[in-house]
Amino acid sequence: VSQVCVTQRIFPEAIELLQAENLSHSYHESDQALDSHDLNEAIKGCEGLICLITDKVDAVLMDQAPNLKVIANVAVGYDNIDVAAASERGIVVTNTPDVLTETTADLTFALLLAAARRIPEADTYMRSGQFKEFKLYQPQIGVDVFGKTLGIVGMGRIGTAVARRGALGFGMKVLYTANSSKPEAEKELGAKQVTFEELLKESDFISINTPSTPETHHLFTLKEFEQMKRSAFLINAARGPIVKEDDLAEALESGLIQGAGIDVFEREPLIDSKLAQLKKHVVVAPHIGSASVETRRNMSLMAAQNVISALKGQCPPNALNPEIWKDV
Ligand code: DGY
Image 1: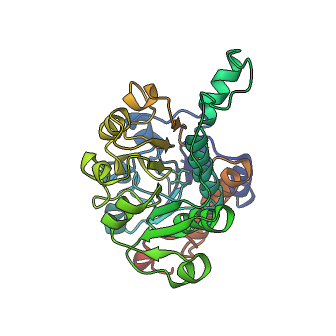
Image 2: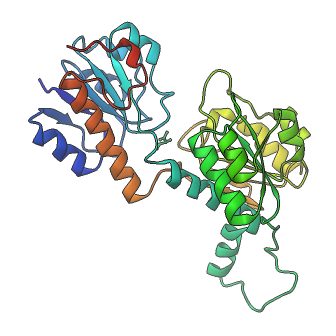
Image 3: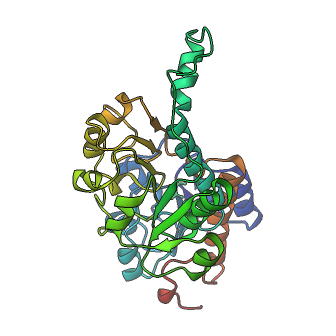
């Protein structure tokens, strides 16, 4: 029986950390998630679990491993884990905040720019040999980003990093919604807290940077798209279920909004989504927000460190439910 179960391939440096601590581990070194039966089998007897967002960690799974002390998600989002069920069982859950903030904000902004300036369309045009001569009225004529209004839904770590790029890099006016006001962002970036309705009405670009929770489920439906400017863009590098995807496709098709940059989907992988058929001012990516080598390595290391701390009897640094931790 191994002490630590690693459900999918992570960076080798993280496995080396486990080895250096002499923690025995079972490692499913594959980029394919285990199905629920195999996951149930894999975790039997383990004390620490290192998992990814594609692993559903619920009460049934936890009950396969009565000695489980720590679940370390290699992600900042943890909607794949039933944290309440973990707390009831005295299991500490950890995530990987901070290390991926700037990387995810970079990708968010890349989607915004690519959608506004139609970069994928231009790329396809070039590669198919259609570029014959410069035209003033290019087929890929886009819209400006600088000086526009950027609305941030969820002004947490990543939202603030996106806002900073907009305000300081592109002279954008920043509006935001959040559970509490953010005086620092208001001072540094001139950001203004507004109601959700105001944000919908006034933004040229809306970036979703909020976690997926029952409250944010389908926060964006046709009703919200109807309130947005017809020239507006929606950028989502947070979680798919926050947007009702069919409604987004309809809003884009019917011209309720102009464009979108989408990194996350209601059903991943993206199969048969209407969204993937749309091209003009629409950019889709395969959930790559945090996907830089440096950041994915740091996330792997952070998860391993969280497990190591917990198995050494210390409350791990990134505990999401530290209140359940009892020092031993
Ligand atoms: C996260 O961290 O939540 C991402 O979705 C996966 O990197």
